Structures are given as structure tokens and as C-alpha cells.
Length: 124
Image (cartoon, rainbow, N blue to C red):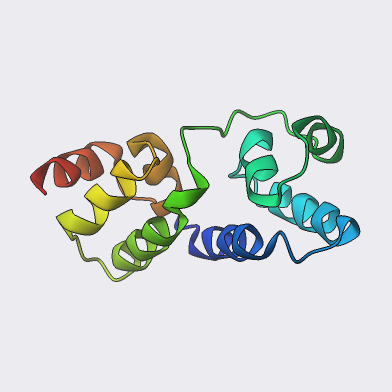
């Protein structure tokens, strides 16, 4: 499954979180949690809310975390689009991995096999 829409949502929230009021950020945190792909810590990083508050807002039992730096969002969006078109670009994959997204998390977000992403990421 490709989570392009979830990644775009996270990117929009992260880029604009300083312009949102507290209530809007709380609503966005809940909406990001409903995707089921982001950890509570990642949602806190996207929204700028305290992790303790996000922990109270989102009830998750499954483990969906992974190494993910919000600065990697633009590169991850590009990789999600690329994978959706059945293409592979070593430069884009490497950029996503170097900017703070683990190959496991990138695999979860794109639906591409983790071993394939790691191999292509090493090519660049």
C-alpha cells in the first residue's frame, strides 16, 4: 500500500504548523493518527505539539514507528510518487534515506520492498 496521501498530509501540517492555532493542531494530530502509519512521536514532530499531549490524543496499539525525520518529507513524497508510477530512481531514494527516513519506514510508506529500497539507495 502506498501512503502518498498520508505523507502529503504530514508535509502540509509540518510546513504550516506555526500558522495553525492550538485547536487546529490538535485536530490535525488526531487526523494524522487516524492514518495508522505514523507513530505518536512522529505526529508530535509534525504538529509541534508536546509528545505527552499527542499521547493523550491518539490511541494506538500497533507499532508503526520507525526512524523518520520531518525534513525527509519532500523526498519521501517524491519517492511515493515514483513508486506509484512503477519507477525507481536511486538518487531520490538515496535522498530520502540520507535525510532521515529509515529504509523500513520508507518501505512502509511506499509499499516497495525494504531490500529493494536499500539496494537502490546504495546505488546513488
